[in-house]
Length: 250
Image 1 (spheres, one colour):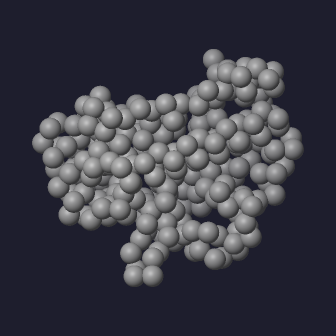
Image 2: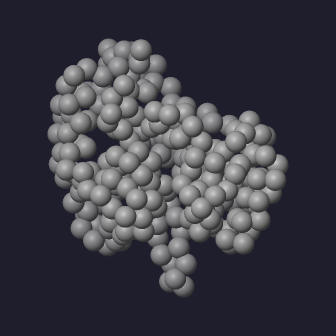
């Protein structure tokens, strides 16, 4: 199995040839280490680079006029950060490391080179962008129509399913290094409400809560709490691969 997070992520969708692997590997050069809580970029600054997440977690957010914060998305190993800003000259959000993290910057034009060189990778990037749009739609439903208990359980399961594409060790996929503050800012809840909900889930044997984050003990139980349907995270690449003559993963 590849040591590259982004290659491992893409290998969930299709069998990659050596050229495709080299193209993806080129997006993980020049790694930079960041400590937790480092602001990588700020809203309104020039949008010149994307980043791949090699290790750790990052989050994008907007700061409101009253100083409160809305977390827009979280990024896990294998994710490319900044794709939604591809069409813009300036950043439309802020980026912060949620844990100690290794990020690999690459200039915007490098992604254009990948698109021009590999038909398969171009299609897979489009597929991932469509998946991200589906996540956004589900996030809107989560914020607007679910109870606090359902919101928390649903969000935890979503992040665990996203980790499934990046993890080598399955146990790591059930550990989410999330603070209660980040969780509250992502779900539009108070930290008090989040703490109460997490303690309820802990008492029911569904999760554990520690200083280094949240561990999922019973995904099926959480799924019952949230009414979670992972279909929006399970892309169907069959027709896409057939149309471009590519093969599914082995």
